[in-house]
View 1 (cartoon, rainbow, N blue to C red):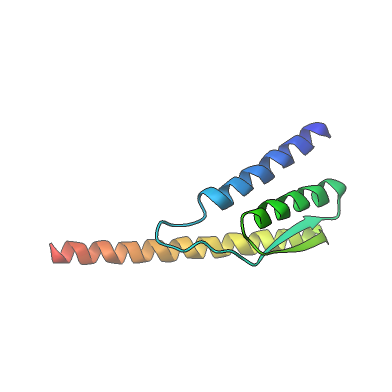
View 2 (view 1 turned 60 degrees about the vertical axis):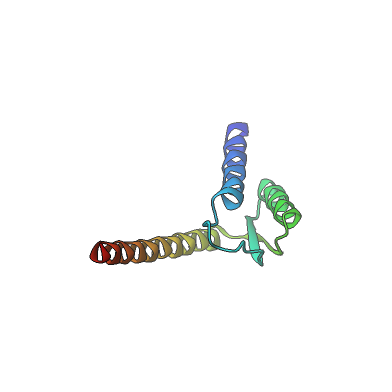
Length: 107
């Protein structure tokens, strides 16, 4: 049980690091929310959700808390976010490919 809690804690803090370190491109303005922090209905989840909320708020984000979520809701949220991120990456790759073609034609 302690090992599992430790791994969950590592994953959450790593996720938080990604939010602050790599979430923005060089040319984009930082987004300050509102963000929703969700947590399942377990004591550990409430604690980690609260830590994440406070960390985001301390960095200027407006945070909405949605605690006590079911596993189904959490899974759907993660799948939706994954699909949105994938679509965003594919769109960016298409734009970059078009720009490279234009540059080659200009040369």
